[in-house]
Image (cartoon, rainbow, N blue to C red; front, side):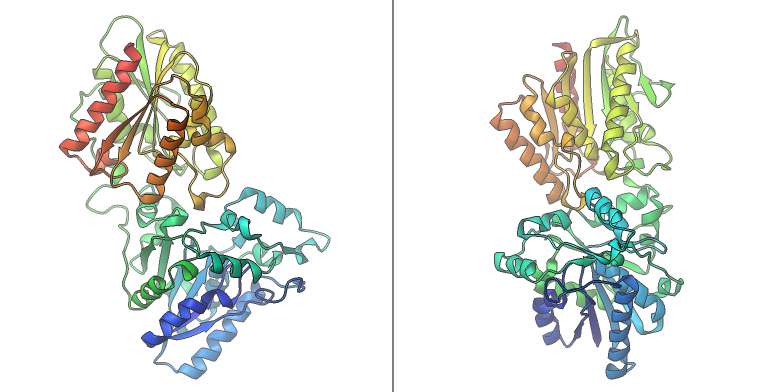
Amino acid sequence: MTEFILVPGMFTGAHVWAELAACLVPAGAGVHTVALTGLGGPPGAATDGIDLETHIEDVLALIDSVSAEAGPDREIVLVGHDYGVHPVLGAADRRAERIGRIVCLDTGPGRNGVPALAAVADPSVREKVAGHTGAGGADRGLAAPARDEWQRWGSTAGIPEAALDRLTALASPQPLRTLLQPLRLSGEVASVPVTGVLCNGNGSSVEMVQRRVDLGDPVFLALADPQVSFFELPTGHWPMLSLPAELAEVLLRAAAGEGHRLVAPGSAEPPAHLRPFLLDVPEIPHERTGNVDLYLPEADGPRPAVLFVHGGPVPAGVRPTPRDWPALKGYARYAAAEGAVGVTFDHRLHDMADYPRAAVDVAAAVELVRADPRVDPDRIALWFLSGGGLLTADWLRKPPPWLRCLAASYPILVPLPGWGPVDGRFHPVDAVAGAGALPVVITRAGRESPEIAATVEEFLAAAGKCEADVEVVDVPNGRHAFETLDPTEESREAVHHAMRSVLAHLSA
């Protein structure tokens, strides 16, 4: 007995919900689509004076109408796609007693005092919108994407060609004030249950959200509330066009209170990044200099070094910091036990825009290590993990002669769709053409998320075309971060294999 109110995202109108509505109605649900003022109308329509408050009023009007017609026995579920979650939250805050659930469709929950512009992944768009403020500029609309530009706003995976044509033909400019006006909430909306529908093809998953919760990211901690549930769909950012029947099923289940719940920090089992390393390695002490830790072998003379580069983004306030995580320490101690200097260090990859300064930190750590008299400066290996994989690009593009090996475990080697544009400098798929004879060792997790696995395959294809020296170590049953999640014999052998390969290249 549910009445769904569907609120579209940027540039789109009520027409995007047609296929979904056709799937929900036979299930007995009521379906109501919001025509947000200034969107879904004829091209060139004026956007003067239209702001977030205008769209909140649009949603409120429909809530009141549905409430009057359906009566108290019908539960209202508000569904907001993309930008649409902001007017949804604003309206639910004022009608909390009438709303049974909010569904955030492939979008994060908006925050009090924060404008919708903050959720736009593309920094160039944020700058463009901000530049239109003043002298009446905010009354102009942000131009709708051309057919080949939708990918900038989210993955178009799964959208039929005809649907993409229709999406483009019916798109409207987005009124700038809707993006610039901060969302204002009284706090009443906090009582309304929330369901997030994550689209894997757009680079989001329950596993990724859980990791951010585990890291203590304050933006994500609220998502571990028992009132918050999640579903996943294997598609891009517009599931109402690509998987309408599957989305309808998810919405009906969400309305029934189903869905995956996240594990809150402080539960009985430690989060994945703080679980023990899968190998029993010696307790080798370390020396700390600034943000760099050296695990030194018991050996005479300068020794080769392996620097382990953690992934991310990692929130700035996380404690312990990555260099003290069991996996990083385990790898460094293993390297030291085998006669090389193992190095862990912290870099400043706190946000998707931080790759340039994280690269500066990696380069600085390398120089500090090479300058240490106990290190052979001509025998260095770099080993990248997870989101740190994009940082390999600098070293692949023009490898220095002292870099004897580059390794990467379950790396992300192409920016994920939901990340927005990343500086072209950090695209390993393009950079590998310059790798020459540099040995590259990739550890590939067989149970990796499809969106990350695809980046590895794209890299390997590019490496094959330029005949780069790439060795792949497979962990068929391993997951992302398998060193702490999957302490199996298969995983242990993969770590041994990768370490032996890296150390062999350092000894060559």
